[in-house]
Amino acid sequence: MRFAPFLPNPRRRCRLLLLTLNPSFLAMPPAAAHLATASDPDEDLCSGGAAAEEAAPPSPSPVPPPPVSAEERVERAWAHWRRLGSPKLVVAPMVDNSELPFRMLCRRYGATAAYTPMLHSRIFSENEKHRSMEFTTCKEDRPLFVQFCANDPDILLQAAKIVEPYCDYVDINFGCPQRIARRGNYGAFLMDNLPLVKSLVQNLSANLYVPVSCKIRIFPRLEDTLAYAKMLEEAGASLVAVHGRTRDEKDGKKFRADWDAIKAVKDALRIPVLANGNIRHLDDVKDCLEHTGADGVLSAETLLENPALFAGFRTKEWKEDGDEDEVSGLDQADLVIEYLKLCEQYPVPWRMVRSHVHKMLGDWFKVHPEVREELNKQSKLTFEWLHDMVKRLKDLGGGIPLYRNKDALQTTSNGLAASNA
Image (cartoon, rainbow, N blue to C red; front, side, top):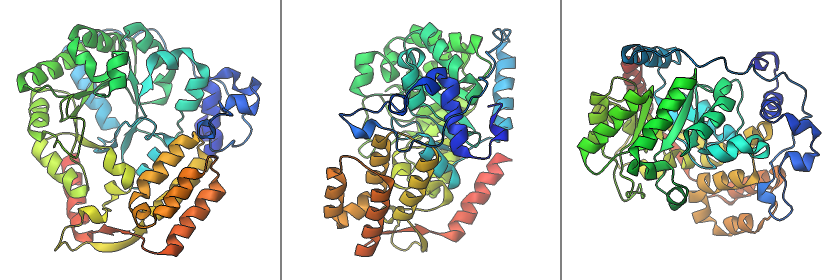
């Protein structure tokens, strides 16, 4: 954002971005601007923030970039990746969960890039209120992938043009396996219509200055996966993130991600490839990068429970007997407090806040289920109530620390640095 460097207050930057994406923001009464709904307080923004100020919107994108050869496209893909610092530790896209304050918390604890939640391209391009509610960012929120689901090349391009000034990649979701994606004909269900997949990538690549990335799942047959990935590269993708599970393998705890398939994709493509799946702690990051040769890893579910994963912290669940892990002095309640403070800076709907509190304090709620019930009964949340709830949990005792092996962390960090060189 052109105006961000001159604004020291991150809350102000965030709200100015809302204004830029939605010029009618100032004309709305506060309730309308925040999409407040009397029927469900969880849809309200968690903080009103300061008064919005006028800001010049970014200049519209210039004419489409001139076409380039396949070789030039590959060279540009790597040049862009290196300009970003070759980020290896990436927050995966998560619906309603990889929003700005959570991304900033993960960045504070080692994440070097992040995806937005999946955004619906048609709703995003048509609905100003939706845009102002579901997409926020700030100067420090980089490198950033903005992810869309889509099945219409022109609508996707319209949505992508809106976010192009604020991100480092526009990402297309070809990996969502949920029923809503089947009904909407997007995500992993476009694997049944590869000509449409190709047209979505080609249209973005030909008309955006920011690179296009794709997040995919694998086919049951490796040869189909490789043909799919090569098609995406030929269509203009500058990066592919591979979730090593098929469309039908939805349960990450039941089905292990296939790192061999990810390695095969990495060996077959000439552009950066990211690996997604089986990342529970920092040792998994090192093992995955070594096994697959990928240029970075994505983590999703584990980060929701432990946003400090990329800084070498792990939950008790992944502390094996005989490990030399030490109690770190940090616990998930501390992370919740940090997250709540970030939400005060960067307002998001209360439903997102509630979800993160449940995820991060899940182990604590097993010890004190009565506190979880109080949270569930609280129809209208406030920061004061949530801070008090966390304090009560700590006072009740039975808290579960996060662990950290400093020697292993140093070894892993050295390995990541060496692979970045």
